[in-house]
Length: 248
Image 1: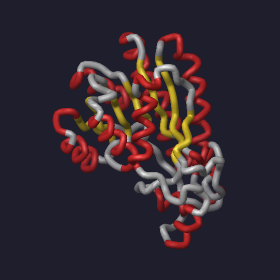
Image 2: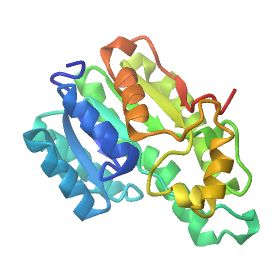
Image 3: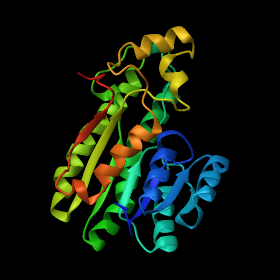
């Protein structure tokens, strides 16, 4: 019960890493706002969490919807202690000049601008409560970029730098800001990262991971639990690689 009594909002919690984080947090005693743009998946996850979960439709690229997510946490559970910025978007693996301007705009709106919207709504609540935790889900792409993912790599590099910058600025308010850098995992975007989901491409990607497998939602959720718990109360600005050795 490492998060007993805590309230968390997790974006992109309708599937993949976000769903894993939401479930792990509830297992450890938290109440969770399941925020997702996919109403069907998000509602299904929230329903499976019982009274500890509530679904809120959230497009993280819109400031009003991120504000609504935070308001829902206050209305439903009486507060907010943890914000997990997990929702992400990518272009398909391929030549950098083949990516459209619309795709680039969406990547930065979802992966980067959403951090601004989340902070605008959550930081005042954290300040009033005397502290809080922001966890940003970045990627090994921002540390050891793969070819074919130039613009996605750049967005995750921005997440890492923003995480460290926020950590320094918000430390006097007892607000900790950390990030996770997962390696490619079994999520709905895996086929985009690889360009095509074939046995050959899977072997190629896995061959770059020393521990010999993709990441799983549970891998990411366990690391998220630690960084968001009081066990990590003296950690801020940490960008933890959850990568099976990929970035060594």
